[in-house]
Every structure is written in C-alpha cells, then in structure tokens.
Image (cartoon, rainbow, N blue to C red; front, side, top):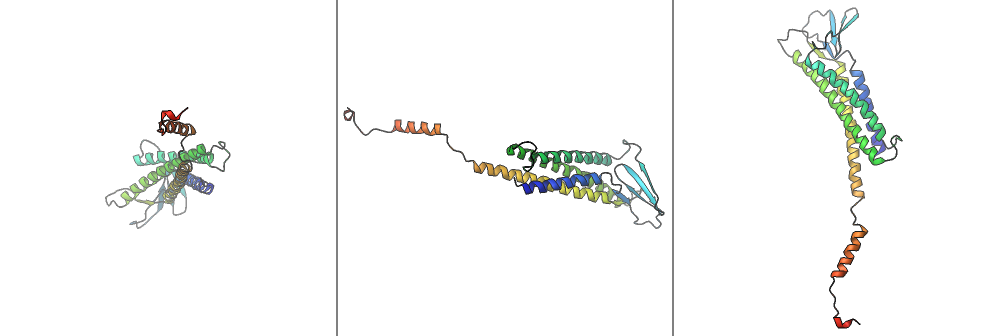
Length: 224
C-alpha cells in the first residue's frame, strides 16, 4: 500500500470525524423562514437537542426538548445515526492508525496491517453513510414542511449544521474508499507476484514415473 494514500485517507477520515463533532452540537440545523412574513420579531433555530430564539435586540433564549418520546421519529433516528457516526469514525481512526505501514503499532506484519487498514476504511464508509442518512432525512422533512401550503406551523429553512454534516459525510466516504481501493490493489499485486510453482517432490515423482513408463528399445539378449 502506498504510504501517501494511507496518510491522505487518514487525513480525510480525521477531518470528517472532526466535522461530525462540530455538526452534532451546532444549533443551526434549521432556521425559521422569513418568506411570506411581513413583520418578524424573532428568529427561531433548532438542532437535534434544543430550540433557540433570538429577538431583534440580539438576546438568545434556548430550551432543551423536554421529552425524548415526544419528539418526532426522524429526530430520534437522526440522533442515533449521528452518535453512531462518531463511534464508527473513532474506531476507523484507531484501525487506520494501526494498519498504516508508516506506523510502528502492531508490529511489521504488513499483511495483517493491510487487513486492519481495510477494516478502518469500512468503518469510515459506515460513518459517512450514517451521517448522510441523518442529515438528508432531517433536510427532507424541512423541505417537505416548507413547500406544504397547508402546514400550519412555523416553516424552516436548511441551516449551516446540515451543510457541515453533508461535507463530513463526503469526506468520510472518500477516505474509506481510498483505503479499500489501496488494499484491494495490494492484494492483487501479491497474487501476481507469487505464481504457483510445482513442488520439487512432485517434479521428482513425475520424472520417476516417466522413466518407468518409457519403452525399452533393446531386447532381452542385449543385457549380459
């Protein structure tokens, strides 16, 4: 495996993991829309954990959601997916660090280190998929309510937290794909580098069998 590819994939995985940690507590997952409102006295913005409001004077007031069971199903699912993404990213960083050839962790068994690095790539892909599903599901509900003419509640627009989540998901998918492609190319090179060779014992047996089965061109009277 190319050490430069490993380092680049590890950098992408670390950056995506960091951005997931930034997106999760970000308060601006959705922001109240001013479309169609003549007078706006406050701006409401929410994330997975709380709802906040700021008035014209700049005073912020936030409150946590009072009940977990009273939340919508997509919010609960998005919470679980984002937490799972952080767990997958942490495990992926640890596995990639052990599997890198430039790392002394795990000894010098490069075949085993390559397999561990491939596991890290799979974990990065799982992190990206969890993040992508969470933020896309959340954004789909925002747009559905926004374009519903009969929706009675407050309409929201997509906030910056979702864009950070989308960016982290793309980085995680790219990092995991780089690791898997590099490990796959390594496995192909190893198969080509060691072609099958018949053992010397098998060659000796074939030679003996050939000599025994070869017909003799001399008669019995030729031997003394």
